[in-house]
Figure (cartoon, helix red, strand yellow):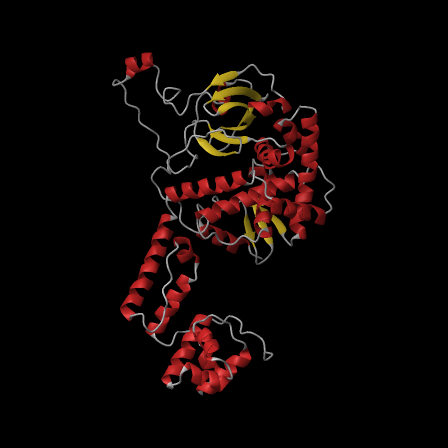
Length: 482
């Protein structure tokens, strides 16, 4: 190794404690060691406090001055119990936990009593444990989701860096524009060095599994998959392109999921072609999620999501999106147009009941499932126009809705609809209280047995990837590895 190369993989905190331990054991002061190696005492102090990563030449000089082999300085264990505690506290104070809590830093020196040092180390470990435990609760998941939704709203659900990733990948495989074919999707995977393997035994808790060691992506066999086969592959590719690692917490997991879905949609509906189509449609006052779906051969939900990515940034139209289960609960949503979604005290909207007067609920009662449903709804925050579709899934039926404030409806197909409703929610008298006649007939004379949701009281599934059975995944990889 050249003389001026920095040491690779050296723990500067442990190294510093070893230097200090050996120096004091030999009765040397900072000035003494500094003079022996031709450095100022302040530079020696920075080395001992782990504030600088020394070059090999300096470490050789220090080892010579302390009359020890260089390997003695580079050992990876602290020289004493006290030094190990100091290193642990220093490392914690430089980490994200202390920064997030805005806790004042403690000077870790000889003046700090050993019992106080021990207490601080144990305290930070306990705080970390409690935070980890908290991260597995439904409350933490809802808080993280609310924060993520606020971030998306602040940037109009538009991510320019992800658009650039998509543009680069499409250019790399020579995509001519328009819909991305299955062949084009496979070309992207091949460009990134992956081979595709369709299997019947994909772990039930996964959409795909990527073997990074052997460059393989495992996908469900086409005969058993009801979803767009391009989406699962592109989601696997997206995670690799974006350099995702094991999520640190639920917030990180949600962020990665949003990024993966966004990049997937940006590949299926490339920005340039999609914006050109939308601008032409706006100019002719015929914007339609259905037309966007058909033009790029994607699902209605993918087209609706992509519309929210581009509508505000490129068309100047504020928008909201909802996916609502047939039970009436909100599954996911986005808004930057002022519509007020039902929410809990933490600001979370998922799982909250949607007003029965809203388009997203009314559409379930419409017998015509082929044509889009349009409706104006008067709410406490203004009048909104929405278009909605019902789609099936293994979990039941969902409605997918896109809406805009009344002032922007002039750009859309379906604006001439005569369907109109009024919502007074969150006033319970709007749709959550039974009519007086029914209440008089049945109140106190009936007792329903509720079907509780599994997530009502349970903590989130354990593991780095919530809901994924790691053992099942690793056994699967063992079965299929070349």
